[in-house]
Length: 279
Ligand SMILES: C[S@@+](CC[C@H](N)C(=O)[O-])C[C@H]1O[C@@H](n2cnc3c(N)ncnc32)[C@H](O)[C@@H]1O
Image (tube, rainbow, N blue to C red; front, side):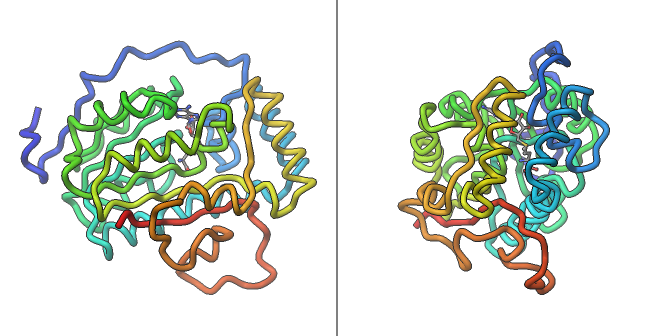
């Protein structure tokens, strides 16, 4: 293994990954549903059926997931290229797609360190392939966002928590309903990183297209046999309490520092997101 002190060396702790777990193809999983919405092929009939049902409930879902990936790219590029961030803790990685966090960050700053975290066995399987092909410092943790202590101790093998870290929670917190203490989880993660760190967070909106969102939320919860919770602008903003929100704040994702002007008749995405700095 490469010297972990050498930021330009590849650190590929593939051998540290746990054994692959069985992939349950009888119950839809959010990583695979999302992969279907993004046009990927890593999904099963149950996922496609659940995904189609949500699409019927809310056609905003497809522009929403595309806008979400584009937001991820713009936020990471801003942090790596302009804000000088060199460490990324990306929780809720998903099945690899275009412009994954390490690709965007390391294109702007090759010395960027990225730790991915997810709890889905299919993402773990993809992580094995991903980690053999990366050239920068990138690691993967098979862990649950509801267990921040395990995430922080595992990530400390790759990230220096004495230096700023961008904590990324992109389209994952709707999988953590209020009874699982989502605000406490975000607070514990942000308490562990020093001043100059960032929180990047997006999640489905409850209040942009209320009736359709309620149907999509109910349909996803029922299919996944797990409660998902969409949130209002105020509820998403609460994740950033105590942090300095960057302009333009918590917004409809396409208007977060767009590369090209957003037309007024562009589709609604039904996703809120923002980026904030820890002072
Ligand atoms: C909708 S995908 C988002 C993927 C990526 N962040 C993006 O925005 O493109 C949500 C991801 O969060 C993961 N996830 C959901 N609940 C989780 C949990 N409790 N702990 C860890 N990961 C979780 C899912 O497995 C899935 O890969």
